[in-house]
Length: 439
Figure 1: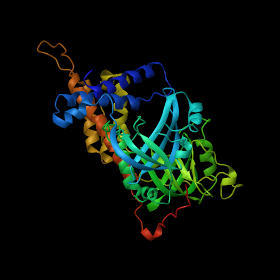
Figure 2: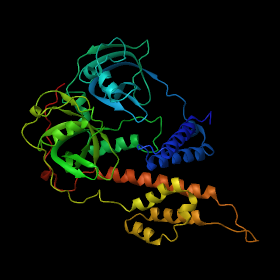
Figure 3: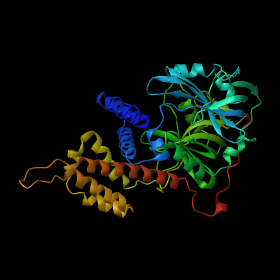
């Protein structure tokens, strides 16, 4: 795989996840292994059939080169702490160009939440700027000789020059334009970025910029989240980006749950689900000027419209487009195959009841894939003397790969559909006014 960086990366991911599974790592998820294995099989298959630009994309690149982008005028948006499962910690500061493009300046190295909190107050590694990451998230930069990676990271080469400049409030140009795109369009763009099988060299961000009205907390099996309503009557569940108690995410979310009716301008990261869902990263100050980095800055009760108000739970939500889809019946078999193997799937026997339920849910292709996958797993032909012939492993792998890619595509379609505005009289859904978000 030396000359196939994309396949090599996928193979390394598979090996890493297998080791995590065998070690009982609590961060291991079978769905991640399914994605990595499907990426590896799909890449290996396409290498033999692709040509031209497609072949170059399938081969991948060992390193993502930085390209020159000339002079940039940048406006700070927010700073988020980064703590990874691999033991790294730091921060990432998001900035926007005058044309609305998003860029990041990061500082991530071995360490945990403690390093993330410390690095936030260190100077950014970009030209001669003396701004810290916290300060850059609310200020501006004028950069000459800028270099940018395909995913928007700003390079810090010797030729890069950067000086502090005036920032902009979230309600001022050019930042205000980020909130003008309808939520459904933003979700579709973010899905292209977060797709399980997105092009590694693809551009785009998974951030959403919304104006919302807080409705209160909602209980879920894994705890509580914050319910909010945005444009078009779409109700969004806002969750913490990191549960680490050293970071401010959870405490801030709990405080915001005590402020139902508050209208805020927020930034969040899309969480693919069958209902609108974001991890909340930054918001306008609930009662004052400026913005709040929700992983680093800690809100106080005095910052709320009613400091003495307790946490408010929103009324139960009616089942809607986010109700469970029978797609999980196929997803479950795809996931079971990875740890249990082909033979275990072949022992399932008749799956007619499952396929009938899937068809009733309007997914005939999923039903056909489940039937073909299970039939391929159990099929063993014999020769003229009655001896078992080798199993058709290539055919089974093709069916499994098709099922894995299909379930991912349908899940993404369901997620995108959930962000469409509620179908009702537009006059019945008032626009959400913007609370002051001066920088």
